[in-house]
Length: 333
Image 1 (cartoon, helix red, strand yellow):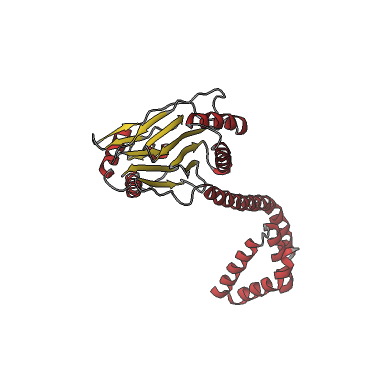
Image 2 (image 1 turned 120 degrees about the horizontal axis):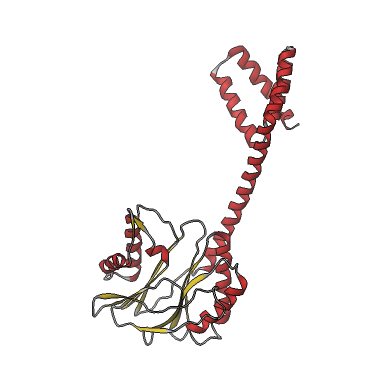
């Protein structure tokens, strides 16, 4: 049995305690108990160990010996529960290991550096509520002065979200050279998503291309949280237009393209619903209130603005992050 290897040590601990009954002996027993737990020694095995140790210390009365049989029977259910907990602990460790791998894979799918331009600032904050995020973003630069921007929210979390993210990234990379506009990208992605993910899942997305020569942002929306555009000349924020069904809901969905021209000082704010769906005290943040916070930070550089808004909202919600948070700020300078 597994306890045979520590029987001598246990006999010595038992003998020392019976003769001395000191704290040192109790401490030795506690340390041995921790070791036995690490070795997954069951309660029944521990009873057997104790009985054998008593026999080595002297003659064991028959009624005591008989009591061990009763105790063993009583402890059988404890042993079953112990084995069940041990099995669950092992599965939990395996799952945590798989989640860590999925999290690392997910991080590798996101851009490690943002493109830099002389007259367009890009700010970004993306924070996962748990180990694996359901938010996806990408900013891909092209040689002709354009960069394509994606922000998306995948229903659910965990490994399934990481797998969907991987599918999105490689599908978009394979389609980027073939398609003429954001509506084409969403049409093709919708067909891919509808065929390849669980029917209970869907993806909201905004996909667009920013032309740094004309300073125009042409985009289409698939059920995604509407962003904001700030007009510096008017000193006001407006909701971005655009609508369309989320990816994966309907195979024949259509997506309308919109275009926004940015003048110097104008700002685009793109976000996921983890920014707006935030509980503050007993009520939820309203878009009008978010606009007031955006207004207070609009004079700062894009990255400073993104960082300041994240810290402010986190403080207002008492440092709780109930959902994945992603915000992208584009500013024409």
